[in-house]
Length: 297
Image (cartoon, rainbow, N blue to C red):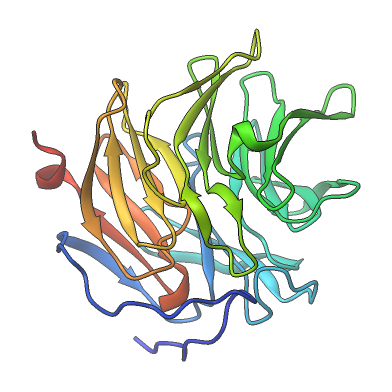
């Protein structure tokens, strides 16, 4: 299939390492009509895979050339531009029939049934909204990586508030609601103008009832992007800068499963099949990989 020529995706774009340190069995790969894919998300209720694509304008470009693609988990494109008019869409999560997306300084919701936009919320002062998570009650959580904040939006009351902020949440990127806690993938401490950090991030856990924050990994493990449950007590996480795919068990022990080029972004994980569905942002492609062998002790 035709592959789109790579281009700069962020103002801080980093050169991609063309080699994989380890190989994972590929299930399928897609590069045609793929432009800076940032997040892949499987909506369990509908069974469809959704992919946010930043387009040519970069991760901070308010240019209206971003979109969301609707697919099947086995790689078939159902609707190449299922939702359009976005700027630089990133994290995706669903609650009920709504698919929520973070888009620089706003969050939007689309009806999964109709594909129509049903909600839009501007986040005052937002700098770089990145990932989303949804609670069972419909509350939407969104990370602002540059500002070092996590917002929560209670749709029933239309209340937007800051849930957590400051150095303790390590410039949060990936988010996941898991067993009453918000799992946070930290990008790291002292973020620089090129988006590198003096200290990489850790995987953190914020109790949504009492606000207690704990480190799942005691030591920094990377510039974390995607965070997904492994279907049990652990997590599959990505490091955007190093391209590492890692498994973190319930005790915080971490091991690298594979290494991709820089730009390994916000992935989906299918525990029943043990498939990783990875958006390779700087490579302009999406691929599914079998983790069965890699996850064996």
